[in-house]
Amino acid sequence: MEKTKDAASIGIIGMGDMGRMYAQRLSQAGWRVNACDKPSSYDTLKQEFASEKNISILPNGHLVSRISDYIVYSVEAEAIDKIVAEYGPSTKVGAVVGGQTSCKAPELAAFDKYLPSDVEILSCHSLHGPNVNPNGQPLVLIQHRASDSSLRFVENIFSSFQSKYVYLSGEMHDRITADTQAVTHAAFLSMGTAWQANNQFPWEVPRYVGGIENVKINITLRIYANKWHVYAGLAILNPAAKKQIRQYAQSVTELYKLMLGGHREELKKRVLTAKAAVFKSGVSPQDLLLQDEVLDRFSLNKGRSEKMPNNHLSLLAIVDCWWKLGIVPYDHMICSTPLFRLWLGVTEYLFRNEDLLDEVIDIAIDDNTFRSDDLEFTFAARAWSECVSFGDFASYRDRFEKIQVYFAPRFPEAVRVGNEMMKTILDKTTSSTTRPSSSSGGGGGDA
Image 1 (cartoon, rainbow, N blue to C red):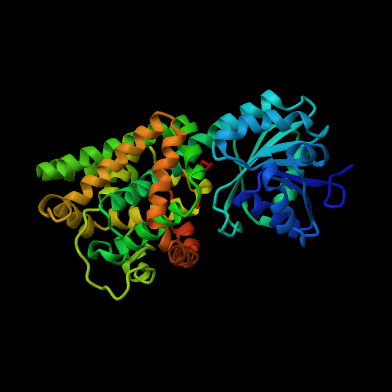
Image 2 (tube, rainbow, N blue to C red):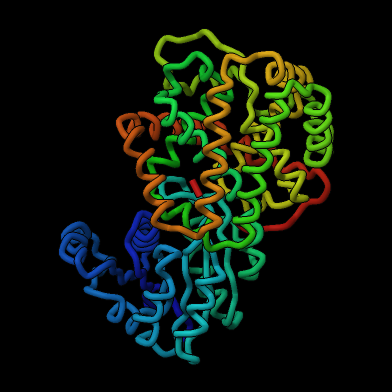
């Protein structure tokens, strides 16, 4: 019998932000949803979803697993093995199981290890945060151990999202996810760490007024307003991500040393070499999306218009890192996140504007005003890399939440402004940054 909305139900194990988003959107589309979280959350969730006629809150994953036809594990990547080991054996005969973690290697290994042989495995990953409209966003489907009819069933389930399906293996998903997210996260996490270390609220500092600076501030606060494990799982459990974060810290360090030593020609040669490797097709500055006059609208600064020079070390290092790793970011645009597309747009804006890039190099050599800021940023990039290399979830959480507390008073406004910024320019960013620079296609992939 064909599995339809009338004849099938969806199970969701883990009712965090993404689990809730999945449950609400699927129920609104007419699917019957069985959901659970930690047993201690049962009463609270039961009360929260009491008015949702298509959502049944159950006490645990055993009860969800035994009655659901497609089960999605929406849990922390660090905990996936333990949770699948507990609830996997209760999976309904003939059901299809998937996961929503950002790192598929441990997820699929847990499914292979603990799920019964009469269960199919077809994982998913929505490449955006819970507050982003899924319409038009990439949705990865991984047909790991499943029939074509089960693939069509899962496609039907998610059809109401109106996302763009991207079909990948788990291995390719993890590689491309690292390429499009790991270094981006590292850059923003390092910015927040440096600002906290200098006891700065950047919107109060003239250096961070307008244009590109608005993106830095809004997206950094958007990340720190999220839950730490959203970023820790990808960084620590994905081997490719570890390598890339390590290279980003190395790029930051080496570029900063060139600035500190006044090595203008060496710095310029390195920056232009990286530019040539990453941005191969010619685009005139007027064709770029992210112009200052657009981004100036999205500021947390109150009444400040004065701008000061910035060497944009974070941006120079991200392109240097891509060059060193042989990553051409345009190759993966089909499977990129909104945050990555925005950050790539900002990076492109700097590197394709020859006058601005020359100015940035001059500032890096000649202007010592913010050497202490850049030093803290360098320390931060290296510290995050070491934390990830050690695989230390506790240290990652402690570091993340310390900075989260520092910026927490501005989260409501930052998230509001950030949402407006994303909504206003994301659609155009998506089309603008899909220009191939060496090849097109590819595929797999946050906020």
